[in-house]
Image (cartoon, rainbow, N blue to C red; front, side):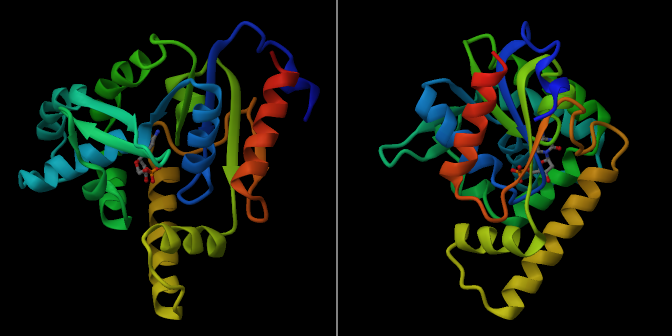
Length: 234
Ligand code: DC
């Protein structure tokens, strides 16, 4: 870690902001860490995924910024809950929506709806409200750059495209056949491109984030590294 990471962070908000592309290991690491510390957990991708799913259900185009903004207040009913297996369930008005928002198709909807500046603007307060409840572990694309620019600890995770596709397939309970791998690799690559090239809050590493390549690291090792950062930058 460079000295620059330590300087000037000491009075930041008690927030661990983990960003990175799809499949880089953000969710697993963030959940393990939040569970371990007993801190609030916020999956910002789930907010965009739920918005995309609501739009799809209501036949609203992912291009219709005004209609998407009008849907945003519905997301105030979003919450996260640990189930007995130590997994996180996404609830909307108390109803479990996790199965509808996982996988690559809802991921694509999320990437599409998240391109709109007004949608992002409206959802900022909703995301920031999670930090009012206490210390927070959050993850997404812009949590360290835009949502919580004063987060005390910032992490940017990366991994090879192949490894990221493998993780996605495993998550979806699918085998690693050549065709499936190629399909998921293509979908992830397209999403990465769209998320990195959009003009507002693109996916990028915050200048003061610790970068970690997780290709050959277990989730536990990733958490260990983040905890080390938290000890060093307190
Ligand atoms: O992390 P994820 O795969 O659940 O995210 C789904 C999409 O949501 C991602 O491709 C882009 C968008 N997203 C975003 O724009 N900003 C965030 N902070 C989190 C997700």
